[in-house]
Image (cartoon, rainbow, N blue to C red):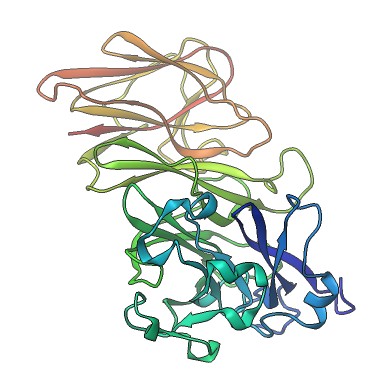
Length: 403
């Protein structure tokens, strides 16, 4: 810590040729910099390395504090572009020759744009900002599109107050780059207590762009707390169909209470990336008259339906919800949480799954796909049935039918 109560924060990390690298920067928390949006500033960044798996690091903390490699805010929150261990054996975009890193304009949360820097891979270990150059526009394959002057850097993406710091990740199965820009949807009034967090997903054919918005979602599916700091992992990527790839997104949460049920921990959330539009579907909500209920079920405006007013819930063992449909597939969308228990799911009268909807040390989650069956004959009528197995709660929100 410095006398001004600034803290050091590690930004992006990478392992290349057996050496661990990390960016660090000085951070001051919202409001202390006088920023109207109560953003956390990130300035005076440096690159450090470790040859003993993180036990010791060079440069020294004193050097980083008194002589930062990148003084100021323009490269204040850098993250490596992730290709996988040792660059993932990727040769496109000169990834075997250069190491790339992107940065916001000096904010941890709600920055305004990103720029891109690069350094020759063989020169990375020198830890010299003078070896770096910055994308200045045009075809990034051409050396003339890069400048040694950071003042020449051209934003690869501009979205005022919508650019939280985070990495770009290459997805080999799609031959595309993915980036998540995250931000508070409303102005903060107290650090760090957002109203709602938004994740915007962008894709591009090259790390310098052109970046296109492909999807977006918020964290309203959580009953308490919020998500921040997402990162798509270069590992654990798997093609799960002819037109889709599953990747892992890691993210953290707030408020920052050091208790088992708090959200200040790392989560892994699976993401499905599709190369074709998702199949057409329609929903049969929990309060739809087409859903047949057996036993005691409840609804209405109370704490168990606050996340989704169409929810119907029960804590009666043996209570069931069933719907008949014509379609090629069906999903059961339900809630998960500390007060929920186990259910059996039947498809066309056959028990297809026994599911545990209980979570430990985690808030309630709304709109979770807990069951999926595909490849059905769309010309025939089918049925899906959810049966509560105990006196713990079960909450059915929606049946989504693929046509």
